Length: 458
Ligand code: NGQ
Ligand code: ZN
Image 1 (cartoon, rainbow, N blue to C red):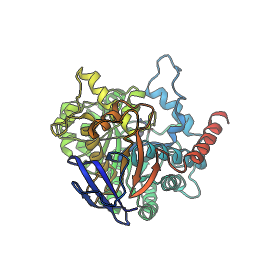
Image 2: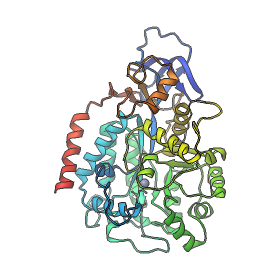
Image 3: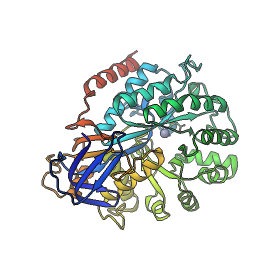
Image 4: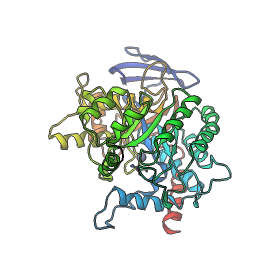
């Protein structure tokens, strides 16, 4: 099928009716025309919304769901969680990584994400020596994305130190460590593979804790020699301990340091950026970089709350990541984002915009635009030239039936929890889910359960 007719569709400018959608063999939209009679074109089962790019994922962490929700140390924190996460990461085989990622990407499709940025740092074998094929685990993730049929931006992670001031890496980090040269070789290997599968290749210097200044400069320059517009993602200012350590090291806060020492621009995505002061909000937003907000993980890890009105007020772009996958649901992330702002400012409908009074509409459109920018993919929504990546809401779902289209999206975000109101999800003009389910759902779930059982009982 290469065309659909939607009674209601959410275009980048807002809701439109009687929209004819057509796409070409490459999966790019060629027609997005409102006010067109349906004729013989197949009709969608409900309103059409753009698919959400997921801008931050560590796929293997999906298999840790529920395994870190108990008190260990006297006071648990992000850092004690990280110790458990390292113990889990130390045991994973390539087969397990692929099984977990394949299932995760299927879950993402069923939950309204049409592409994913995989922030991939598990490079080496369990004892830290490189695999015979140095790209083994990168290839496993590319295969997982291909099997599921989700759009992919692969971000191999540069990881060299365990703290500011070039502190050597710990044993728990041995699977992540690479020289800058070895990273540039890996990028060279991966570029044609990504191109062949329609994936985008970028780079993720893990954090200022993990990448010394010279390596940061050389790796980013090396990436941009391969592909001048490739995305660069970095974790930054997620925890106050990181801010304190950066101040002790450099006299500057992490975001301020980064803006002064790296060529931060619209190719960059600042993951979390939770702890910024006003000048950092202003300068980071003005750089054109996307803020990568991960509401469920930031809540799960006790990070803190991003100040969305301040960021938006400065004109900042932003998008959503599911990060550790404590939650894999695009709509729920938008709800959690808004709720964090409501709790913080004791107001309602904080993220409505001047153009869109409906929070769900305003946030989805902004998150799609920012997510597409951070992904380096033509995934900016329902517009000619963009990928045909979209979701069809189920107008018969109990939470939605009888409502007007914009209210259906609001109900999908705010009132359909733990049930899915998605009828179908399409990626590049190919239908990936039907009545909310992916055709590989059962087989991929079984392989995931097998991998998790091995990991937790082995
Ligand atoms: C990660 N996750 O790389 O998986 C990190 C934890 C770190 C989040 N920051 C490790 N959410 O930051 O050192
Ligand atoms: Zn992360």
